[in-house]
Image 1 (tube, one colour):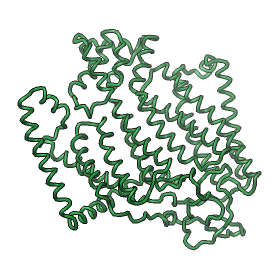
Image 2 (cartoon, rainbow, N blue to C red; image 1 turned 180 degrees about the vertical axis):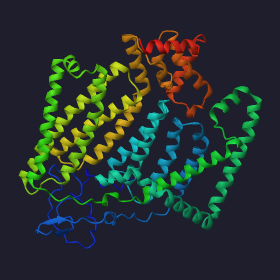
Image 3 (cartoon, rainbow, N blue to C red; image 1 turned 90 degrees about the horizontal axis):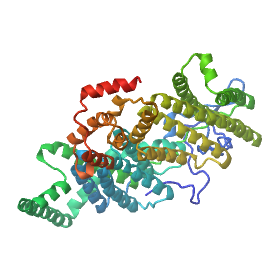
Length: 558
C-alpha cells in the first residue's frame, strides 16, 4: 500500500529529484547538505540557482517557492475495484449507525472497512506494503485504541488527530523532512478527487454491468426487510430478546435522520479519499527545499560557541544550586519555593524549543567543504545538544517542584510530556550526527505518535487524580473544585478519599455518567469501570453543596 521509497530496501542513496529552479545557473557538488548527514535531499549533484554578487562571490538566489512543488503530481489512479466500493459503502453504514453516540470502540470498527478498501485499491494499483507502511498503519490503529480505553476527551482528541496523520503517511509513504511535513495532511487532497473516482467506477458498473449489480441490491433489500419484520415480531414475543436487540442494534431513529445521513456521507467520502490516496499518492518527497549558502567557519561557529559557553555557565549554576540546596537561592532572590519553580519551567521550555530552531538553522548554513568542517559541525552542535539535555532535565525538575507545591493539572502534565519528547528529539539529533540522518525524519515523527499513544494509555486524568490524592494524604491540601471537573478516568483514584470528600469529588462525575448513558460501542473502558465503582458505592446524598463548598475552602488554604 505504500509508495514509500524505503531506506531498508535496496535503492539509490538519494532518489528525490531536485526542484526546478526556473532557468538559473546550476552548481554541482554542493556536498552532503549538512555536516551531520541530515537527509534533506541536498546531496551532491543537486540543482542550485546562484548569482554573482558585486564582489564576485557566489550567493544562492533560490528558486521561487512555487518551483519547489513543480514535480508534485500524483499518478493517475487505477480504476476502482468493486471491493473498494463495497468497503466504502460499509464504512458509510457503520459511520451512520455507530458514530452518532460518541467515540470509543466504534472508531476501530469503522476503521476496518476503510483499511480493506485501502488494501484493495493499493493492490489494484500494484503497490505493496513496505515496513514503514506497516509501522504507520499499525500505529494509526493503535492510536484509535485510546478513545476505546479513556473517557477523557482531550487525550482521545490528540490520539484521533495523530491517527489521521500517521494513517495519511501510511498511504503516501515518504522518508524526507518534506514527506513527513506534508504527508500527514496529504490525505485531504483526495477529499474531492476520491469521491469523483468512486462515482466514475460506480457509473461504469451500473451502466455496463447492470445485470450483476441488480440482483445483489435486490438481495440486500429483501434481507433487510426480513430482518426488520421478523426481528420486530421476536422482540414483541420475548422481553429478553428485546433487551438483547436494544443493546446490540444501534439507534437509527427517524428523529436523527439528518445527522445519520451526514455521518453516512462522511464515512463514504472518507473511505473513498483514503482508497484514492492509496491508489495514486502524492509524491511529497519531491518537494525539495534548497540548502542555504554555506558560511565560513568563523561566521558560523563563533555565535554557536558563545551560546555553548552561556549554556555551560547556566548548567554550572544549576549544579551548584542542586548541590548546595535551594534555601540560599530563595533567601537571596526573595522568592518562595513554588515561585522559583514556576518561574523557571516556562523559560526553560522556551529555551529547549529555541535550541532546536538554532540547530536547524545552523545545519542549513553549516560549512561543508571538507572533513574538518564536518568535524567542527558535529563537535559544536553535539556539545550544544548535550548541554540542552541538561536544560531539559532542569525544566522537568522545576515542574516537579511546582507540582509538589500546587498539585498536578492537565496543563502541567501536558507540557512536561512535550518537554520530555523535545529531549528525545535532541538525543535523536545527536545520534544522527554519528550514524547519519536518513532515518531521522521518520523516527522523529514516529516518536511523536508514540508519545501521543503513551500519553493516552497512561490515563492522564487518572494520573492527575492519583498524584493529587497522594499529595492530600501527605499535606492535607486538595483542590476539590479541579477534581470535580475530571473525567470518569479519575474515579478509581478519587474513590480512595475519605468521606465526605470522596462524595464531593465523585458526585458531578456520577451525575454526568447517569445523564450520558451510551451504547456499548460508544462506551469507553474507563467509563465502564467508573460506573462499576459508583454502582457499588454511590456518593452520599449528605454531601450537598454546602458541605462541599466548606471542604473546598478548608482544604485549599490549609
